[in-house]
Length: 327
Image 1 (cartoon, rainbow, N blue to C red):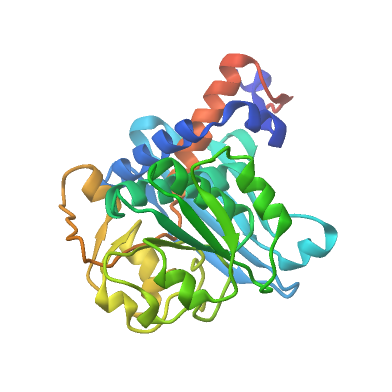
Image 2 (cartoon, rainbow, N blue to C red):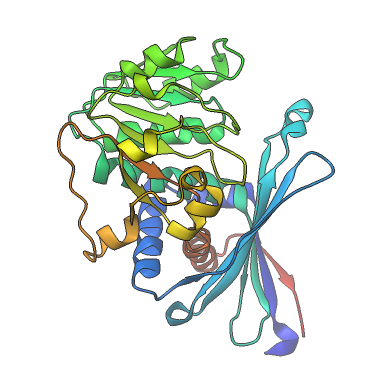
């Protein structure tokens, strides 16, 4: 009823009580399949620099068969660190596609972290050698930690983890978050030598806001898999020149990766969409010596499918704050 309509608000703490890694993995897998089957649409991405020094973006889309429509407004504000806050900020909104009325507003930070980590986990399960024993992660932020946790879940034979920090110094907070994983079978150590860390690793994860390459192409051994997370905006890059052309490349979305991801630096690189592999529309095989790369730019459908699950779970449990929103 129009006069009794409500808008559901789901804040950080409510979402924390509803969201698990398994839920995020299933929602993200579903989003990839919907995209590959052309059942879900991702609309053109907005991604613009601000006078404040931040970057603001909007990712939106719909899934008609699931009665799903919405967007995520998100970006990166590096000055938030000076305030003791997280530079990445995100908000998800879901709408009724029949009327345009808003259904829910969700804190998008946890959603973004979880679905990006889940996408990375899917990439590792599909592409990395399952006997991988050593991983190197570039970055010490929230997403670097989430990607490392995903690697531990996806690759149970991991024994060594190295991390390269932006300032070249150990990060006690990052190490404490890793210790909380209870991953006793995998040790973590800081390193200043990026090339040596890459050369010693079976898996490399780049999760930084970098606009310059992080390591040398010659440091990458045959058989290495790389999850590229940080390049999601024009001008950003983490991989060295020429590496894409040496690798078998998978993307979340070819057009988006070519505009915003690592593929912007080599847009003619042959690549395979991950969703098409999940649905069986495409095959992706690796020989033991292959270098494989997953160029991740993040899909609107990932945010929306996971947001929809959280919205329905909150309604079922009576969680969140319902606001009278008549029309």
